[in-house]
Amino acid sequence: MRPTKEIRITKSKFIKVRCPKCNFEQNIFGKATMRVKCLKCNYQLTRPAASKAKIKAKVLEVFK
Ligand SMILES: [Zn+2]
Image (cartoon, rainbow, N blue to C red; front, side, top):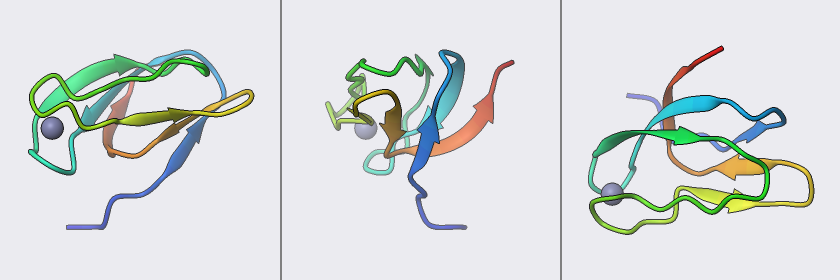
């Protein structure tokens, strides 16, 4: 398995991520200023930045 990568989302779109802490999978809306937490363990999955969100979880799929 590849290590968790930090990716940048510049557009608002749905992303399927897997929590690096508890492996719980969930769909999140990758919006720039949104702070998303894992529904199961409360791990912070995204870190809002100025104009884009940083995803700290493993991205499984990006819905276009
Ligand atoms: Zn979790």
